[in-house]
Image (tube, helix red, strand yellow):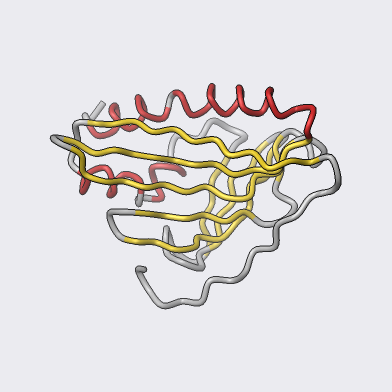
Length: 163
């Protein structure tokens, strides 16, 4: 971990008819793990270039354990705290109870995790988004996650290639 700051516990829960959902995406880039980690670990990666009225904010630092983070805009509020960080390997962001997408009645993200590891001549990136989703919207949420995260590898490539 970057520091020994105590990480607050984050309660997770939802009303009946919500089920657990886990979305994972794994991809490989030709860039070295150090460059990929620096990009993932830079708050500017997530704060700059946000389309108005969406915004990402950090309170008390960057991606260090215990730092508060929020990604908000119309129909979404993902508020959380940075959890465990293992340099050049893993980062955890735990979302607070009350975070939601579209409506509190639709989907409630609970965690966002990133792993990176060296593979051959590049880096494997794995991300996982855990959520609680109303049962009848499970398939729609899954498809929406796939659409949203599909652009992530291209975004990383463009950023690391200087474009």
